Image (cartoon, rainbow, N blue to C red; front, side):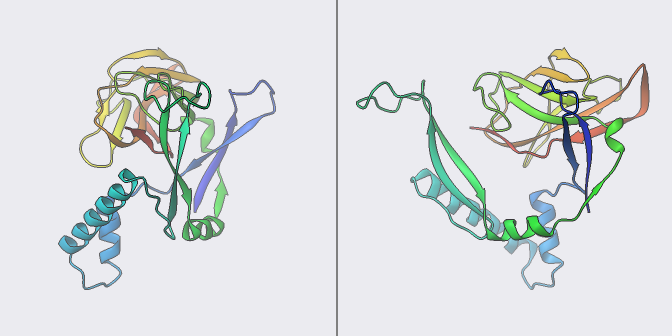
Length: 233
């Protein structure tokens, strides 16, 4: 069951505006998905499954690179271009324009969405929660990361504090080790601003770990994983 809690929305001025923060049961990595696939009783070996995943991913990336789109039961892709063009004779300029690959839910995900059961919980009163993430260089929200740029987080109980080894803001790639933000520009309960490390291209999730709890430090750190994937082009 997907749990959620309500917290004060710092992005609006109305005092009675609240936002819902979801708490997923857990986040599954690529390898964990393959392990679940094998438990279905298939005769495919893990080596075969990994190879198929690799080929499917490579083919989809090749299609996107060639300017094609993908329509699958899980998701659909499309393209868009952001930025202003100076008149009808202007052409694409990477310094002023950005090509975006967009993902939308397919039929399987839309059906699954309707079947998810939710349960309200009061855990949000003390748990850290990330409402919105902005990349300062690109100006995008909940979308991209610019290596060596600045990231801004808004939410509740976000202040990063404590001496536990896990405390910090971490950028977690799909494969490989998480990278910690070493420079915090601003560190408040309602917002955190940090320098983005020199990340390699790929998809990342954010993990914030803190022992902050008012005037006292918790013995055990609390962890919040942002439920959106951020991309380094």
